[in-house]
Structure formats: structure tokens, C-alpha cells
Length: 401
Image (cartoon, rainbow, N blue to C red; front, side):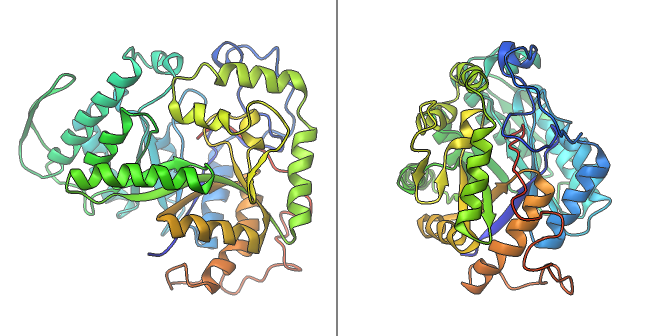
């Protein structure tokens, strides 16, 4: 079982602070309690293309693209980027509640043909009612997961190439099909920590994603989903979503983390925690419990830092340390059964190089990566570090998942 490395595409913007790109007060509409943010990089197609090309050159398999109010549309943005990359896959996040399952199946089939098989799907059921209502979705938390279950059953049925009928609580389809099914079928990624989410993963998905909790908690989640899948006669693979702060030495990495904390004033943290605490997402509540809103004892496991989650929703932990230490932690999660590592670090362009030139060779030396075309062939690093990320460049945690 090899490690699959993926990066993140910041379609909500990028920058150089830990303050999220969006405000938290009033669902992100008002910004009066948030420290002004400087150094913001707009998510224009030229900048996103830089990140995508860097990820491809550095040997990442795919990039995750988020979905929601505060980012560009994932389908349109990534389709544009398929035209400036060759091998990179795109893990496109989308919400089942705002699109027809038959249309989604058709879109995926078209995407596969245009991109020559480079689509992966990340199903986001949604844990925030305020955000869901912006898109016209008024179902409750558990109902949304029940709908996702039906949605994915229809998508897979329609991909068979034969007329497909379905009658459920949320959808009724007669003769649904894609005249030309996608080839290959896109792998389906999915995350959810609630009791309602587990059976949906067990019945429908290829890769179950968890946010970066300590190894023991991740092990418990894997055992839970694996047991549910076995009862369905299926096998599910596993992935994890983490940030990274990897440097030439542990001291440099932790100094970067410390500088990020120093930039956060109490009002900003309080506003973020107040808003995030209202989330219906069980996964989000588990992220908040890792730090409890306090700056104390943020290293919740060796090299696992919960400081990101003080002000950012979604994935709230980072692997912090030397390249070898970060590789150690990846190897530890891999031993638990995690194959897919969906990573980010901010700014995304610079941090892709820190990880790609620092940690990836460590993983390759340990035999954890498939042999293939070496990244950055013929492109030497400058003094062991990327020219675009001189020592001590600060990190930004931006919006998205």
C-alpha cells in the first residue's frame, strides 16, 4: 500500500496570515470583529495555474478544490486548469443537495473525457445549515446524509450506461443514464464523523476522508468505517486532510508556527470560535475539542499542531517539524491504514515546494511512494530550499476545506 500525496487549490484566496480569508461574524457577511488581512492573493486563474503546475512538477497526484460560498466554482475552475497541466488530477468538491444526481453523473463523464481521466470526486454533504440555506437547501443534518446516500446510488447506477430507475425519499428517477459513461469511473472521496455519515461511506464511497486528528482517534475512525463496510460486503480505503509546516529543521518549523500564533489577537480567535461552535458538523466539533479555544498545549500529539483550528473551519491541524519528522508522522498514519494524504500549507505555492522538495524525498527513500517519473527532474533546489520560499517565510491558513 503506497502513499498517495495530494495538494490543495485555494480557490477562496491565499495569503500570509492564519486569519481565514472570510470573516466569521454573521456567517461571513460582516467583518467588524476580524483583524484586517494584508498580503491577500486573489484566486485568479493565473495564480491557481502556478500552484497546479507546481503540484504536478513536485509529484503530487491531485489537488483538492473546495466548494462553498467563499470560493470559485470547483468544476469550472479545475476544468480550466486541466488545459495547462498534463498529469495532475483534480479532486473536485461538490454538494449533492444543489445538483441533480443524473446531471452530476453526466458532468463527471464529460469531465473525464475532456481531461483524459483526471477527475476525482469529493462529496461534501454539508454540516452548516446557514451555508446550505444560501444554496436553497433546507434539510436537517441527518436528512442531508440520507439524501447523499440516495444521490450516490443514483450516480453509480447511471454510470452503468443502461437506463436506471430509482424511487426514494429524496429522488425519483426514470430511465436515467449517461450515454457515454466515464472511463475510468472517478473515485469518490467522502468525509463525515457523525452516526448518520458512517453507513453512507460504507455503502457508497471509495475513499473515506478524516480531518487530522491524533493517530489513536484516526485508528478508531478507521475501525468504525471498516467494520461498517465489511457488513456491506465492501472495502473502503482511507485518507486524511492535514496542513503542513515542514522546514529544514524542527526549530525553523516551530518558529513559523509560533509566529502565526503571535499574529492572532484575542478578538479574532473569539469571533472564529463563536462561529465555528455553531456548526452542526460532528467533525468540526471534534476539531474544536482538540484545542478548546486555548493557545495552550496546541501540540496535541507529536508534531501535530492544532493552532490552525483556532481561526479556521474544516481541517484545523498541521504536521509541524523537520522534513524527516513530518515523514515520520505520515508513516505513522500510513501504518494505521491511511493511503491518501490531502495536504496544504500557506501560501500554497511556497509550501508545496517546502513539502515536495523536503518531505517527498524522505517518503520515497522509505519505499512509501510508487516508483514513477521523478518530480523536478533536472531542477535543483537552491541551497536545499526553494527559491520562492526563503527561510522563515510565514504561513497562511486560508479558506476552504
